[in-house]
Length: 480
Image 1: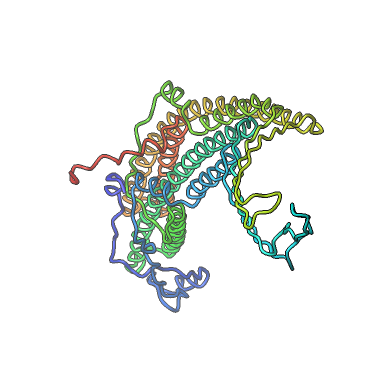
Image 2: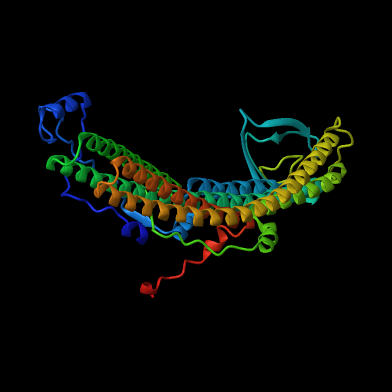
């Protein structure tokens, strides 16, 4: 809470009483007519005050600053980890495609058992007849195969396309990290704004509680009235409900931040976010050309253009050289015990039904889409920068105005409290001034949050975020 808000805090007029107020206005009015003093009594129809609600949020064990939050999210966030795993997947696909351009080596072994030897009767040189074995009953054949692509233009083109896809995947991961960093920063600022809102609502509750205690003491002393007491109680209950709602919103935002950071618990934030310096309009426009989304679309346009230009490789022949050493036991009439052979295989598809033309047309369309996406992203980046710079200027002016409004509302509330205690006005003016002070402080908190969000928008539009958080924030004097 700022010093001005502490300076104008309404002091409690009596010791804290249990919170109040079950009202039965008709019965209380009748009791006031029967009683010579306006004291609260059971006969008047007023119930005893209720207990005060717990004035604290749920405990949060972990606390983190903005720099560490973004760094941890980039490392442990589920979306960022999936993007990193996708790079490995695309790398595996590239290795599969590359295999078609590299030599392969394999070994085949075959054992054959026949029911008996295969023989035939042959006449020898001496004129006699003898049995010659054509295929032995048991035989083993071991053949090695070495395949070397000598000319494989289509496989080489696919290898190039796979490498381009891997580069695109890496840039896509950087863009995912950028998105995760921005989302984490926004969640961090949301928690910070909710903490400030809790302070605003707690101050409003304390002010209305002090007013309720004063109205109760006046009523018990015989100088007050039940209408003021009831109005003060109604305002106190409303502010207490708003305070509990802000506690719930704060804890929910802490849980959301914990999910982004990959934690299984809520995470709290430091009191003052450390935001990097803001660029000028010219700096932001120039630096935005290095944003990860623009780099990604440039890479996709480059890859699509290269893929189209490599379409000619599908019309070229492929030549593969095969080498096969072998071992045969036992040898036969047609196969010696050991040997080798070399083959050169030419494969050339002269007509494939138009499939190659279809793939070429598909690549032309992909190139056109990539160029359109790049052009749209470039124009969007410039628009983001201009809008972000204007938003920073507007929100900065709005923060100054809203802060002035909150200070004036504090002054009005203080003066209304003095006038009410002096008996110059009813508590309607005081309650209205307290509500206006609470609303003005809430609007000031919203304006400050909008300004911090505008800072993140400008850093993201210029491409500085989250790379500007790579360096840790400067240490405070007491930390050095």
